[in-house]
Image 1: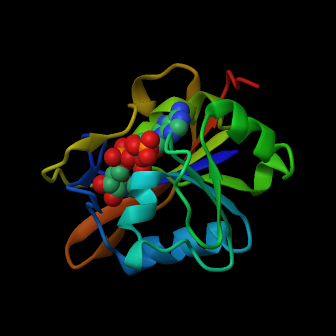
Image 2 (image 1 turned 30 degrees about the vertical axis):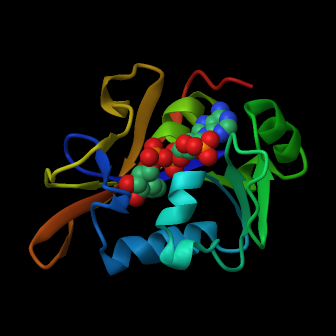
Length: 166
Ligand SMILES: NC(=O)c1ccc[n+]([C@@H]2O[C@H](COP(=O)([O-])OP(=O)(O)OC[C@H]3O[C@@H](n4cnc5c(N)ncnc54)[C@H](OP(=O)(O)O)[C@@H]3O)[C@@H](O)[C@H]2O)c1
């Protein structure tokens, strides 16, 4: 499984149920990376998607503790055990952890790589990502040149997990 996220300089990733950044080039990167693949998300991230609907052309797996939760075109799992059981059906390279804060922070040790778009800004946030720069188990293996959108600078990075949990 791989993690994909957009983060601010202070690792903020969301506020009041919404993303902090909405930059077409980053959205395109997310779309191209996950298209026709499997995406794993928490119930709150599903709610934050347009119309609260799953992502098209992807297998959507949603975690919730609510055993009565139903949503068309989503595979619902109610526990970590159920998630692991479900993930056995797919090639791990095809599975992307797409958020949000709770799911990222529970599952990052089980991700082989993290694709982190880092924005050179700090915005009001209530949801934060683990600090990958301060974690010796994670190695920065790629950093793009600086991109810019309406004055907002950002880079695409890849971190590799040196201590992958199975
Ligand atoms: N920057 C980015 O790239 C990015 C990406 C995605 C999301 N976000 C942002 O992140 C925020 C949402 O994140 P969040 O941390 O509030 O929520 P979240 O991680 O999306 O979802 C949390 C929910 O997932 C379920 N869950 C988590 N662990 C579980 C477990 N072990 N077993 C069963 N269910 C479990 C629970 O649902 P129940 O309450 O139903 O039990 C929990 O309330 C939003 O602001 C969103 O925009 C940012």
